Length: 140
Image (cartoon, rainbow, N blue to C red; front, top):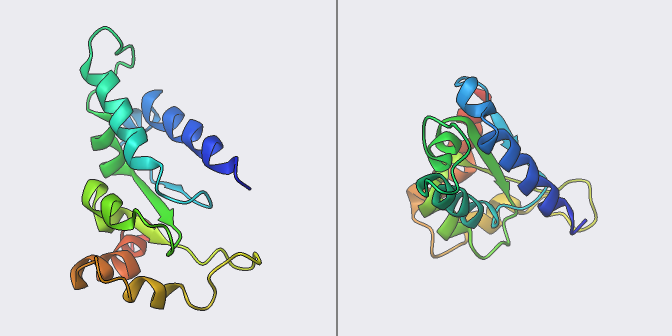
């Protein structure tokens, strides 16, 4: 569903900008089923509003990107081209890979191989995306 990304953007803005992540520093939030390429520019925009005193009505104690880093993870479909950019922006340990199973447009059972075969990602980045993100999110 193409609109799911916009709905998730609003959810992320609510969780971060409305202060849920700030007030509950141990809450863990996963933004799933909406791809991941949208989060970097969305966090960048929230950070710019946070840094601009004329726009910052949030009352947040830290920048939105820092709140995301502390409290949030995002799933990514293995064919999204901006995976390396997202890994650089939020860190590969904040990415959860997705198969989208059992949907017909999913990547099951080949999602891990699609990520492992990406030449622009370092071995450590691949390891973090394939295992580190889930370990952190689920406290494994």
